[in-house]
Image (cartoon, rainbow, N blue to C red; front, top):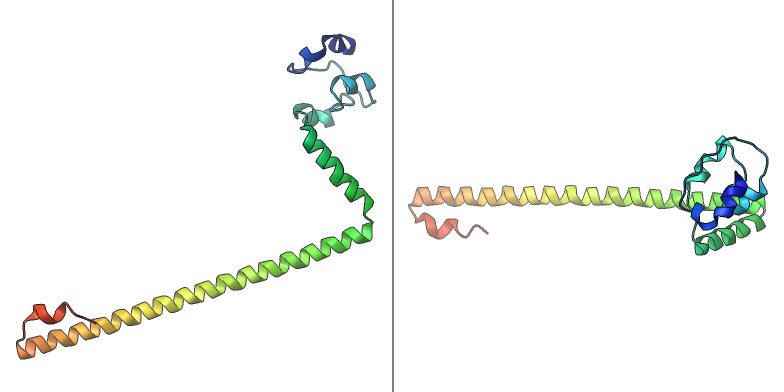
Length: 146
């Protein structure tokens, strides 16, 4: 079956391949045909069968990052993880404090606005009472409530 696939060459790229048997043994011919994506036919690799080959730039970047990760010692990686955790914790606390500050500001603003509304209401009520008691024209005084 593999030799037939190999002879088809590029036509296999867009075809769906369903294996007749599964094996955990490494198959070099299958690896060559699939450009390194599939090394053997087994149930655990089905997700790899379904993925398309990554772009060369992405594969190079992945290899570069993998090489950098392989060069680091276990202790260095643990230090970086703990440092990142501290930074995340600090940012989370800062974000929470910022949220609390904003909610406090909004509460103060609402109280101030309600106080302003209460003061304006009191002023209008006083003017209306003065108008009623003195008989002044309502249009001249109600329009200017500041």
